[in-house]
Image 1 (cartoon, rainbow, N blue to C red):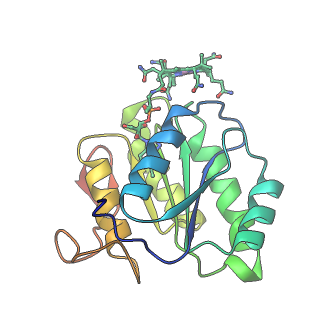
Image 2 (cartoon, helix red, strand yellow; image 1 turned 30 degrees about the horizontal axis):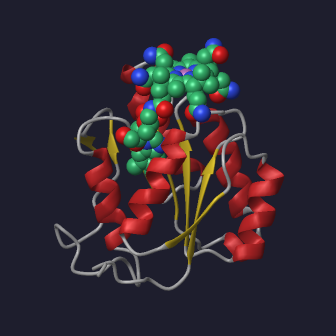
Length: 164
Ligand code: B12
């Protein structure tokens, strides 16, 4: 018997508009399903209009965007502004992660830009990013079963693990 406790609500997983990679999305879907969520995976290259429409229609408990092609810092900032412009989605937890740029040295700047644009959490690739993401999800209201690993929401890390 599975020990996954179902969580209420849907999580939307999506690739950003320019990004055609898909296994990152499959990975996130499986990870969130393991945490007990129902996941709607919109797939790669999702235009902002479609992302906003689907989120308004599905009323998810969280949106998770992923980008690995190096344009995440641009696509993500534009997408989250569009999501936040919707009255219905203003307070929705929205996270992004992956390879947000091309050079690791720019991660700190990309993370700051994406947080300023409206994300609740940003997980630039590096050690422990996935663990931090799991902590973030567990700490959400009605989050995954059991207490958060470290008892709270971590500060989104920047530049490969240096806390803000
Ligand atoms: C397979 C692949 C492709 C396939 C994709 C097929 C498919 N159906 O997905 C094809 C051939 C289509 C492709 C195309 C391109 N690719 Co490509 N691709 C890869 C490759 C080899 C593997 C990616 C993969 O599937 N990994 C497996 C998944 C599970 O892992 P992942 O994607 O790395 O995601 C992990 C993390 O990023 C993280 N993560 C991702 N999202 C999120 C979100 C959150 C919230 C969190 C917490 C974590 C997280 O968790 C995941 C698991 O650890 C990588 C190189 C590599 N070895 O990684 C290059 C790579 C991603 N591609 C790259 C590039 C540049 C491209 C192209 C732009 C090439 C081109 N000039 O055309 C195009 C993209 C075009 C576009 N419009 O997006 C670069 C990106 C460079 C960068 N960002 O610095 C890479 C890194 C290759 C390289 N070293 O240069 N690619």
